Image (cartoon, rainbow, N blue to C red; front, side):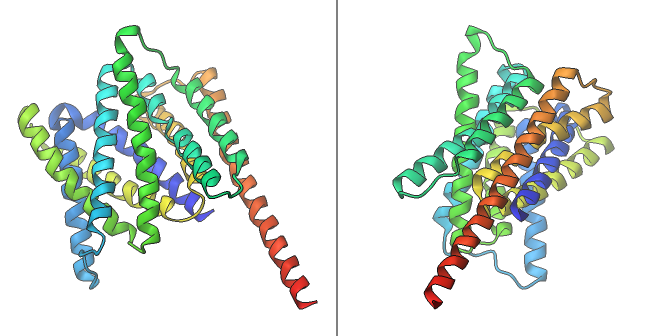
Length: 301
């Protein structure tokens, strides 16, 4: 359950990040934002690690690089699809990640001959239906490439989740995972900005947007890394859907966006999927604990 709370916090922070990105992109550029969010995280984590006597060095650099490049690839594919598709369609495709993670968990369970929580898979589908109601996706025939890129980005993002779990199993702390990912963001963002975007327009508003982006992005990444590092990875992925709700509420607060009846129903479906998935996991753990107790009692007898 703790991992679910971390994912809810991450979903909220990513929604806040989205609001700051919308405000700051015209002045900073997309790749400029990618670079800055990386700089903010690297500096903050390095100062914290130095002051607390922790080391940034790792024995698992290869695994960190895999996670980092997968993360950058997922982000690039998502940004490409967002630029070419209606916002609702791009966001809906982005939120197919929990479906891919559920499918991956099912495949791993079959390979290992382990039972699979089919109820979580069902909750993934129900939650995605809620997302579709809120975002109302649509695209034309000339946008198929962008739609495929969006789906590919969601698939790669699912692979990122499994790679984060692998790093957690190697006892790599979440802050170090975020640190190396942020280093790669700096490199990719810098060269992308220099090569494809105009110079930054800096004023006090830009500075505040940049600080908001850096703070939200850093702590969102830390939260999502903690969420995927422990607990049920599919349940954590389902909690990602709540980002749609947080985003809609922020839009209503900042821009006066009206939440339609269809969107409200979609949000309720997302909430129901999250609650049902959590209760299902809780019951499953109680059942496992009861079976263990029975086995212990039988062994004593």
